[in-house]
Image (cartoon, rainbow, N blue to C red):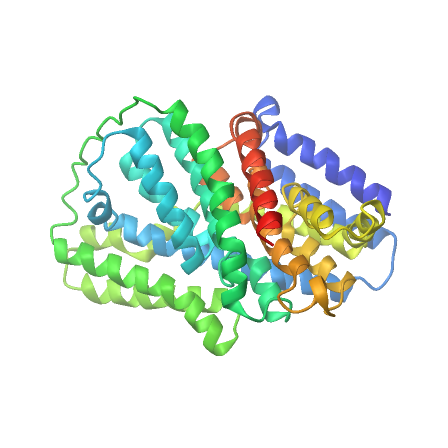
Length: 422
């Protein structure tokens, strides 16, 4: 069974990475890959139903979260709320703007999470940059910065949250102190790589839209404020009630939905129609959500079959128990498969004990850093990357050609920085 699963996974991975060559949408391939993987498991028999149901629940949580975040951002965008922010950015130098956008994404991700931050920032750069080639660089750096920013925060990435709740990283302040500087280093190197490429380039102004549907600037500010509050409530609700993040996200969506219905209830129907959440929902990038579904179903099948756990155990043998080598390799592997099952496998393999495996030990802190930042090496290695891939139509090979090397250099420098500081 394991051989068949690996064969199907790599064949599917090949077609996803060469999407532009075959002209087959990656979402379709991912769906086939995910469903065939579980059909193989079913063909070999066994009691797999409870594991499949558990996987579906976990994946549904992510998809609901993504749907809610994309809709909230879409509502703000429909009201042209982001123009309040973009109007404050006056620089026309591409390098200066890249530095600003990267910095915002890095710190915002720690406050929200890497997925929500990427969605918000992609919409923001669309308001600032018309040139598609230039926007590709900005979108890629948003992914890198969002993943690195999420790595040093207990609510910034799913894996850090897992380690925090699981008791491996119970004390937040020491954890933040240990990971913050390596995270900065992992971003600075690719940032300067692209700042050199953008040296001397300027950004052409985007023509103003002839859109009279939003007459009241007060509505813009109100919708932006409500939307941001809704996003900020997600980690707060999670912390207070210990509920999955999608609960807070969908509550925020329901709240802003009610507010805009009230705000626009007396406006003409033709104006209301373009601003209502129902209209925004028709414009959601459904193929990206289905791509997510297929990939996560395939990864959950690999996890069920014990392939990821077996590989994690093999790492200990190959590297003779070296924490640096094991965690660094897990980080690189997270660029290929989802970091969540890899971290879950590590949690199962290495019980909390003393020393580097104790609470806030070296192993767990480095695992949080590597699993959070390693996914940026490939565009499909993180939820943030997949979201950017769908929103900006970034191909696997294009990101591999332009981003993988500088991101890998930044990742390596971050690992060395963490090791030296520790």
